[in-house]
Length: 433
Image 1 (tube, rainbow, N blue to C red):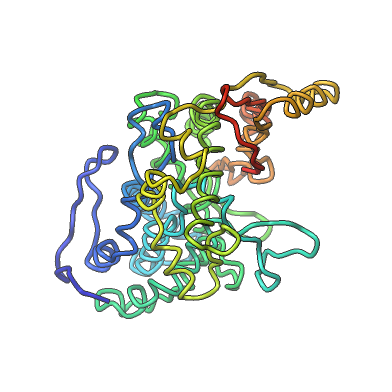
Image 2: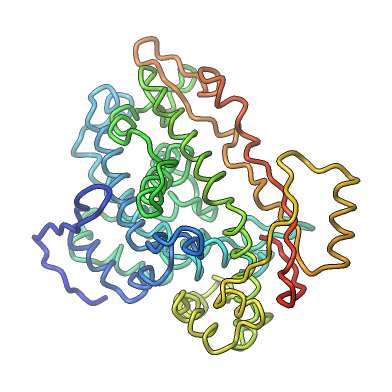
């Protein structure tokens, strides 16, 4: 664990969203580590630059932004006396919790694959001893599994033995518990505060909506950040006195605008047909590259050992791009380099009928292409509805109860597309993204 930072110094890093992100010595030493610097070489939005040329920002700057956003949210919640009374603690007692949240925010994306989500289809199948494994279910590791493994196996020393953080007694598992680590028993901290890192009101999506919009030059993901930060609070169950993240009743419109912003980004950017085509091509090319680089079955190593996770963390966009330039990505690599993606021939914004699906499959027997149902992802889940809390009556209710607009949106956008190769550019490949 190389110590590069000055123990008594507060570091400030320029950021286009917040102005500055403030970091302490421990956080700076984590950032300066070689495995963390890897995030500078992983694009936030994969090959979205093929559609929006400004989409060249990285997981590195996003991760720093999530630290700042999570801190602002936490400070607003903990700074209110009525919230501290619900928790039964004083401000000084929350210093350790705040630090755990900041470390989780800083490291939440450390396990992302090259080209971010587009690389996840090259992750191996879950092993039987994994907590999420279910007999008979085909399920792959996700980037969160790699993040959790990296925190435990690579960054543990930075968390537990750093001279700045030793007094707080934070363990690596305290951090991974906020990232959905099912091997760690839930605690009051993880139950209450985990939603700041992964949830409908999390700092992750609050940051990437603004950051992606800024770099792409669009307004789809914009919302009132200051209003969101100042309206986030703790609700409390009357039956059990359990606390949960919520939006104050008077500011429920900002929760609505956040959901609408996310819908707009999904429909206009993340599910853009050309971007989806390039997701397919980089997935196929990555599998080919991993085979050529002698990775078993053309897949990333499973995150089940320090050796494997370090081997995985040595891969980034630069290595995959280099392999593409060296003709290791096959025909899909050539398609990416020459920007000649498969074209969207047919699009359905409702569930296709059996007859339409049969026709699409017939087209695929005559032409090289793929059927993309990935743009039907449920991006707002009713079982995780945002809570709205009335601080006077102490009554909570779901956002969809207040907002009729949001109540009809969870299934949208629901798009199925048929892509066909340009003449002479086709190659068959299974697509499961």
